[in-house]
Length: 342
Ligand code: SF4
Image (cartoon, rainbow, N blue to C red):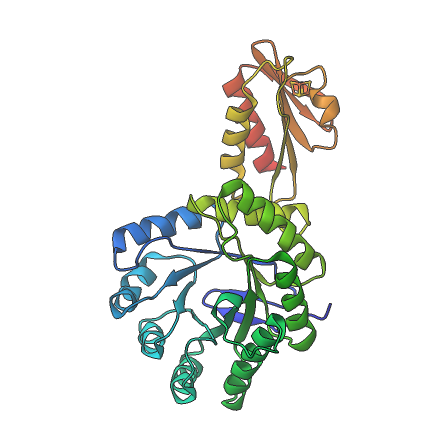
């Protein structure tokens, strides 16, 4: 797969050899500034690289000034229908605009947005969505969406604007794969990937994983968003897990046992704690949290370091060899401190 073009979005660069950036979206109207800022902080804490906000009206666009002040990560304005919302968002310091090629049709209005984005060096994502397209009876869905995106790219390129990201999303896994494949074969712009309206937690994770692993395994995807109904953090955690499994993310991986009748400890409690405390560590390490010492260290010998329950104690092991034993809290503290120093 050829490398995509590098595109700068605020403080980060996507495309080229850069890692796949994780994107999520606020689940609140931006004018509710305190709630919006709280959601931004939650997303930042769990490792989100890019945050998109819906801009349904001018009030939302006006809120960008305060939102930008509070955010450490780049903010993207999601625009539909009204080009004036994009213009106001750019004036208020947004880092990137997403335009839906299906619902802003007036070329002169698109040009106004592009020229201002060019002046301010803001990237634009041409974000096609199969649910928004209008097509001729004889045109297939993939061709219709591809043609819309292509037409919009031509408008931007006619103004010598190349700070472009593209995407074509739908909720059907096969269609999603085929349209992304077609985009990557025809353009060198970075591609944002996701399965739209993936659903509630478990179904959404399964569907997104099946759909996106196929695309990512072909080397396609420079930014990723998991669309889940429910808690914000789950979108980012799912994206991180998918990327970790594909060796496309630098970070700690927790290997934890499911527990059984031999378990001496609440594996979930310790796995959750270790996961939380090691979330920001940028090292490729496997950490095992196992319920018992009988099978624990042995089953987890691929792990770099780990703990296993042993009566009322925890044993600490490295590469399958026990190196310490003690009270659970003391051993967890030692585990985290060893991980930090590896
Ligand atoms: Fe059961 Fe021990 Fe295996 Fe956990 S590590 S599943 S407690 S045998």
